[in-house]
Length: 452
Image 1 (tube, rainbow, N blue to C red):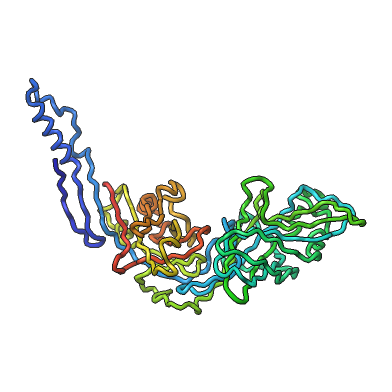
Image 2: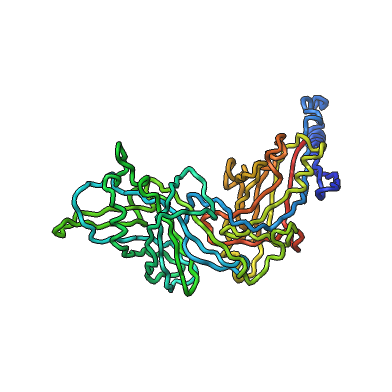
């Protein structure tokens, strides 16, 4: 039994193959007729078979044209990140990046009892999840009270401006850290900061009533920064709510005594509170110090490489020119997409960029006509496993399954969905990525299958 192909060359998007499924059915039925030729009335065989018009043809487009452009950016959504970052890092392609974060503080107990007490000492506990760069230091931590409310339902970006009240605690020396390992650090904080937090005892509560504010409304939050004068270091924190209630790792604690030095307990002001705090990351970029030059950046010229910086200083946008031509061609009205697969080969210099250091998964966003962007429907609405987006270590490529997005674009009669994608890196990844693009020796490919 064989399958034949009618080959047809498309003049705008590569080769197209037509697979005639009906011919396969005819051959199968013919074989059955021969095998059953001894039946008394063979003309009864095959009655009820559907006519050819009830069968469909699957079409394949091997290469659907698209172009990639590198754009300097620095404006990514960093709201409620899985990880918060402090410090400075360097990349030979992207230059220098410094990281800061902003977060609320939340009182751990339900209400502070207003009695005469004395602050014995104040400490800050921080769980440093990872250190990349120099762990030796010195590294100095500073934090500043923010002037404006932040909340979990708002969107904050990597280039957000933050106003301060004037309260600051600066240049607290961190202990020696261990590179690529987690470390719990305890820092002594001036008592004056604790006195400032408890200066309005009536507002030290999580349950405001008439004449009171909850503490989170009374004290807006803190802006954290790190200074490393000798060598760069990037510190990673997780101030997500803990898996076990009240099992905090990042918090201020105020130790209290009475007037005769008897311990009266403690107050905790928590960064990784069970009732999740609003928070976001801030990044500053200096590409002028990069050793290597990105040949085509912001000039509208397709480069042979696609550069995607983990911290958002450079992004790659994909113009789906072939898909746009498909949509505008009446011959392709009302097609049903069965497969759409985008494959990008990775670039590895075996120094800064290796398979082992590369992000395990990349994400794709599409753009709406109003300028907003969303993750493609295959990742957001179908499933992350179907979407894939992962690095294939053997083939050293990233593969994206996007038939749901392609179908949505083709079916969109309002023009609200643009034929434009952006490659992004998940917030919990620690590394940037470079992909082969456009007219590279091994170019990326967009494959499409559909039925009419």
